Image (tube, rainbow, N blue to C red; front, side, top):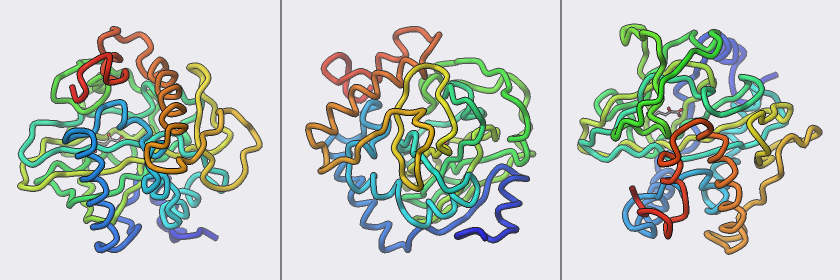
Length: 288
Ligand SMILES: O=C(O)CCC(=O)C(=O)O
């Protein structure tokens, strides 16, 4: 028996590679999280640095709680099973009328994970619509193997390496994942997806949370993840502690060490300058 989804929704996820929209919380609850996010950005001088925006749930208590939101975890459990690690998180924030976009890609390209049994919950903090540059997916493409990608490092591309799929994608095959604040979608690590710039008068903000079943391994090096539900009988990842308080010194130290490690995995083979933007702010510009 699924926990949150219907049998038909579970089947649709496995057939199409995504599911949307699902509701995590009501609009009022999301208004509170939106205010928290604004305060977090203000703390960082207006926008999150690339470093803070890697696994921020290790630093910030309310993001740790969001990564454990029961409705999100119930849906995730329905598609990947009961023993769940949160492997990564981060915001995709496109300010109003900004050129940032996400090229067509498969998430699995540089993540170094052993199986494609990885699901992302994309949680809307603001209306995500075709006008504001919502995510678009090509249904069914998750059944393909890994497709070659090329790195572009394009300035307005929100992806770490500006990676884009090296095969033709017909935008007519894509569907819009429109979401209202408090709603979320699920997408498979192999589905081809991307998004256009934000032409709306509001910011398009989504928080992505990447979940893996505990049997998945990191093949690019030693990595860490946080058990958010069930038991970990595999110990393939070093366990990550929950933050005791926002930016608690222990959390900051742990996060720093883990980001240094995962950055090496994610940027394997890329020019050094690319990963520099993920280094501590005293080494490089804070919000480059
Ligand atoms: O937020 C977007 O537009 C794209 C998100 C994305 O590529 C992802 O979650 O993997």
